[in-house]
Structure formats: C-alpha cells, structure tokens
Amino acid sequence: MRKTLIKTGVLCSALLLSVNAAAEKKFEGLADTPPMGWNSWNTFDCDVDENMIREMADAMVESGMRDAGYEYINIDDCWHGERDENGEIQVSEEHFPSGMKALADYVHSKGLKLGIYSDAGNTTCAGRPGSRGHEYQDARTYAEWGIDYLKYDWCDTENINPIGAYTTMRDALHEAGRPIYYSICEWGDNQPWEWAQDIGHSWRATGDIYPCWDCSYNWGSWSSLGVLKILDIRKDLRLRQYAGPGHWNDYDMMEVGNGMTEAEDRSHFSLWAMLNSPLITGNDLRSMSDTTREILTNKEIIALNQDPKGVEAMRYIDAGDLNVFLKPLANDELALLFLNRGDDVLKYSHDWQFNIIKDDQTGLEINFNNERFTWKDLWKGGKGNTDKPLNLEIPPHDVVVLRLKPAN
Image (tube, rainbow, N blue to C red; front, side, top):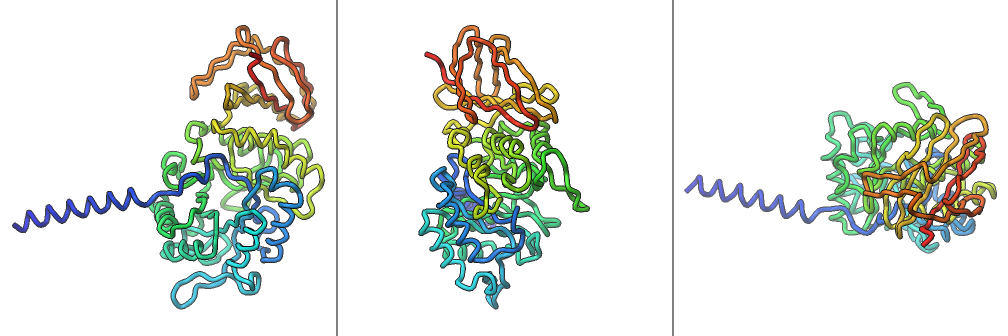
C-alpha cells in the first residue's frame, strides 16, 4: 500500500510539474519582428533620471522615430533604490521622485513603451540590487508599474545555472500577467541560441559593443567590441539558423550617432537591420544631428529588419575587404548588402549571371541567367536590373544596400 501511495505521489508530482511547465511560458506576439527602441546605457551609463527619460520619449516622437517604428524607451542599470523590509525593490527617490508608475504612464501617453533593467545575480553590473531570490516579487512590481520590456543581465552570477535562472524570471513574468518583452543578456557566454528560444524573445550573442569600427576596448577581465569585431564573432558562430519570428539574435544596442563616421554609422545600422538584430539605439535623441536622424529613420532599411519572413542575412561573399550579405525577404524579394571593410575606396563589379545564389537554410536558389530582378539602392535611390553587371565604387567603411524584386 505504501509503495502504491509513493508511486501515486510521484506520478502526481510529475503531472503537476508538467502542467506548470506548460502553463509558464514567454508571452507570444511581442517579437514577431525584432524590437525597435532606445536604451540609456551607451550614452548615459548610470546617469539616469526621470526628467531625462521623459525628454527622450518626447524626442522619439518629435524626431519622427516613433513614426519610423521605434517604440521602446528602455532604462538600463542604476534606476534602483534599495529593497524595503519586505524585499520589494524601490526606485531611486533622488533620480525618480515621481516613481516608476508615473513615468510609465507618461511614456505610454506618448504612444511608446517603457523598458527596465535587472540582473539574474545578487547585484547588477553597476552594483545595484539584482533579482536573484526576488524574481516573482520583481516581476509583480514591474507589472504593477506598467513595464513593457525587461533586459535581464548576467553579472554576479557565479555558480548559477543560466537556463534555470532565465527560466525562473520567464515564469515569474508570465505569472505576473503583464506581457513584457524579455531580453536575455548573458553575452553569449552559455550559447543561449541553443536553449533560449522558448525562454526569451531575444538573447545577446556577443559581448558589449563599443563605438568604433574595428577595435576592442579592454576593461581588464573583458573587452567591449567594435562593429566589425561583433560581425566576425557572429560569422564564426553561424547563428542565423537559430533566429526567427519570436526569437532573435541580439548583437547589442547600436552606437549610431556616438562618434563614428557617417559611413560607419550607415554601415552599422544597415548590418544590424540585415541581421535582424533588435534596433535599439543608444545615442542622445535630444541632440542628434540631422544625419544621424536620417540614418536611424531610413524606412526602407528598417523594412529589411522588420520583414515578416524573419530570416537573418547570410554572408554570401567573403573576399577580403569586400563582404556581401544576402537576406531573403517575403514575396520572393531579396536584399543584398555590399560592405567595404577597408580603408580605401573599393571598386567592384558584381556579375549577376556568374554569382548564383544558394541558401541551404531556406532552400532558396536563384540563377540570374534564368530569373530576372529589378533593384533599388536603399540609400541613394538608384534603380537598375540584373541584366548587366553592377559596377560599384564603395567608400571606406561604407555600404551599398539593394532591394531586389522579381521582374515578372
């Protein structure tokens, strides 16, 4: 009889765990295309307060970025106060005297969404209170505040299992009941692309970005990476197979407008769009130049990132300073990005008939001897077709991006 009871108890426990596992999941429909927005960290580090966040929301609307598709205003590290006697997280009264709920209401009134930051460890990367052991409390608090996006970092996590830690917060967010975009940020250290599809909406695939073209900045035990460094890590990892609607590779927040050249900014933005990375900008929206605004609001480049097919670009040609990226789009269309990695003007003639396209991931095959396409240059507006070779002169660190449509 005792054995029967034990077996019955084990069976019931297993069934209960199965039911709970099925019930707790990430919110669907929040990431059918990569998210677009702004984050405070790249420009402001820990210098965040409610007035600046309100001004940033205003600027997102006034600059035309909201109309171009940007919707998230994300506060990174350092918004925190201490936990109260019940363990409930508080905002910094000095920097957010009106409270986070009032700030969320303001952001929502602008037709935008508010994001927040926490960490799977005891403390955040800047030493503020992390969420370890308080996941369900914090998720309820975020829901009560009206938060729409959570970036969840990975500092102070020694001996913590990443799958367990990120799953716990996913379950806590789900139980809290408010749909919140869940951004996993453990820098690709634990190959999240292999396990995070059912946990988060996106996962960081590399270390932190740095506003330079091809450099790394050493912080001692780790380094921040320039645009090409991140691009090349991605090549080695072959990550595109893991991304798609609802689950994206995140190559970190953009540095457009933060000190690189116009060509480098244009290339950076175009590459992140082609790679289906979240388009989260990190500049000061209040003071950006017209050139920066025009880059960030190029709707035809944004459309590549937001294409419903959701296929991350492949490196189609890798020939020294020349890289060509290919992105299959909906309706049998294509995008091609020609990148000049080098320091001199690159002259290149692309023979469509010679360069057959084959993408094993999607099954796409195109022989331009048999199929004809028209193309449009998404930065300069020029038009042409695949009947004759494409002759390009690409300035240093710059790109040419074409959208191809079947001529028939």
